[in-house]
Amino acid sequence: MAPLSKHLGARQIRALYIGEPTMGKTGSLTSLVCADYKLRILDFDNKLGVLRHYVNQQCPKLVDSIDAETLRDVPTATKSGIIYKSPRAFTQASELLNQWSDGSAPAQWSTDTILVVDSASAWGSAALNWATAMNPAAKDGRNWYWTAQKGIESQISLLTSEAFGPHIIVISHIKYTEDEHTNETRGYANMIGSALGPIIGRYFNVIIMAQRVGQGATMRRVIRTLPTNKIDLITPAPFSMEAELPLESGLATIFTQLTRGEAAQGESK
Image 1 (cartoon, rainbow, N blue to C red):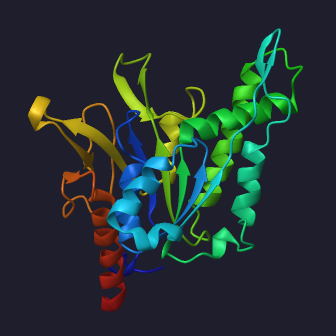
Image 2 (cartoon, rainbow, N blue to C red):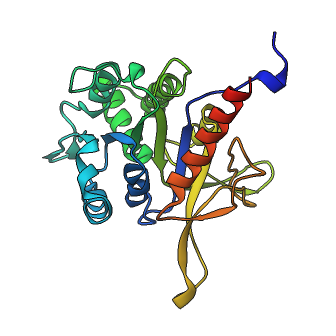
């Protein structure tokens, strides 16, 4: 047992980064690259062109510090509609989390590296393709969703465990859901189905949101760190963190403030 004043908490950042589509979440990773972090990306969206463009513009010498693995299931058109005969994206992600394409073990990466999942909604679709292929004859489609949700939750549990060495960012769209008991509308990460979003936040020590503020000529994009009336956001340093940070530099600011805080606590022990 140790007094709370000596407790450092998790040294790694486990961030859930949410926002509406086209808000600039992927491009905003640029500030982390320019701050000398290595990015390893599980790319389920295949939309990393914007990140390459921004990094080439702002810190071109660091563009090869990004290593991305694009994971997409191949659809097949049939008379019954689109099907995925041999979906591999979800299982490939599991394999890469055990051993990356360069032969290294992601669990052993240090905190100069950030593993990014982009995006959670496409990750969920890949899990559903996998679950459907595992049991194509299921009479109740809810079984597919349950299996997919459990698959995603088990991977998130791995990523956010203290034994997993690097920092983590999971990028997600927002899904708004009305509570059947209170009639309140709440926003959660959009992963797969409706059951996973409300519980998945418990795995993360940072939940932040990209959003637009202002209108017209005064409109700007920011990263919000404090909760809204519809969306719960958290950071380990709520009193020292700015409520809003510029989208272009906000991620680097958040990582710098949180990792410096941990380092300062370690030195004071």
